[in-house]
Length: 272
Image 1 (cartoon, rainbow, N blue to C red):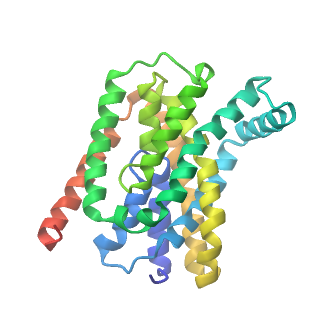
Image 2: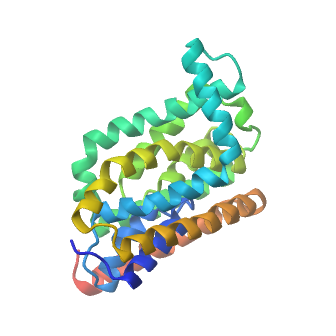
């Protein structure tokens, strides 16, 4: 693993920010970019450091929601019970986080090695793209976040486990689960964004210090984090406006195309 150049960090930061909240798998793009361009891998530590940028954007973009969730969490702890809507929504975020947190600890060695194989990424992109397209086209949009139950939150949280495999996409898996449960496109996306913050924060707390100890606060790291923050703001704003009118089909098509490109490159490079 080597420290990326400033240009490479800019590209990786842009990929992270643009794809973290789109259902196209940011981990796939970060894993594949060095392989496609012939760069030395930056490593999982650097990749997770880029999440600091998306974390800042997520916190600021939904700052009013987070303020409500914070006080809801305080109420939940104080009363040890759900007593109002903010405490209910805070409980759902906590509940949705638990499955992925457990899976992340158990499966971390595979996430850093086996799961990052290009063939697995390509298959995951195509299969998850087909599932996203099918579910989005067939399921109704009769529910908003106000109708969510604890079972819904837990099921969407379980779907987040699949994101340990690059190519699946955390937002892709959770949005697909939300749509399968009948939530409208915007509600499924917003809950997906909100439930990602505890996992991203935990990964940053655990992994970023390692990356900083290895390389320090280098210009490349700072450029990557800053670019990820700016581009993720664009991704959130565009996605919420786009899917409310047109759905997720375009992202499924993109996933098919990227998966096909990877398989083609593997065939030409003899990487089967």
